[in-house]
Image (tube, rainbow, N blue to C red; front, side):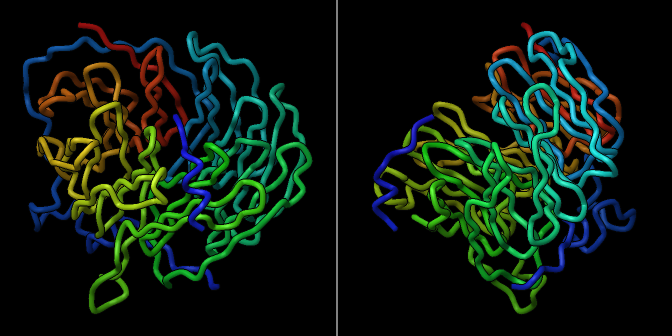
Length: 387
């Protein structure tokens, strides 16, 4: 992962938060409208074997604010009941468990040295890498997405559209940046990214920003979506998932907006953009970008040009997670706890495996050992493939 220094040369009120189901007119599972009915699982010729290397019960509960954090050797995860766990990536052996008094609203963020979670009142709780609590600090309002941890910072985005950075060692607030936002925002799985001296974050309203880790100054801002429509509901156009970096490209997808890549070496110019309504985020590999749209249609794009090379509608309306590119496949989870593996080159179904039946909202994470999956019930597992 590289970030060009060229980007550095370019220099409220709380929102009513809506779920994707609300924006679909609460008809996602309506018996009277087949347009929103989840597609039934179809038979296909399985071309790939999928196994489970390990499974760990982290705790009880999860949701859009929970996602695993993965380093070279470990997986960190949290559950709504206050549990925080570090697992060995290769074996799944639990290396430590910690517990926060009361429940959690969001987590987990970790760089392998500091691990952070957030309570419902906006209190950020940080642990060292033995599972010992280091500090607590208060965000200005509730936090609905996992903290980002890296480069000596713990960064949170609160519901008042403020992004705040705390010192990873002491919990002292280092900087704060706030932008005005719309009165309606989408409650979807979102994440920030820290890389190359920048904090990258999508914002409600379709903006993607890059901030200096030193002081929070906004060095670049790009438009992924332009809100349109006669009503506030129609104008909801939020960046979903996590921004993705691949060499000189910074990419993101938005609900009721676009999927787009920007050239960070050239001051953030748009390389390509396509009309697209994302629901859960995207992933990239060396040559392709992959994302599910808000109807559960999986798409494959050429990373260089944005050309849409395939669409797969077999998983329509199955509330797909953000995908992970792993080997010759793209893996994606659904609302019934299935993980589907699609061919990178044409999107055909290669394999399917069941987990524990809990919805998979968290983005899947590809690692050298397999694909890390966290369900809303509080379990984390590593899936491996062969064939």
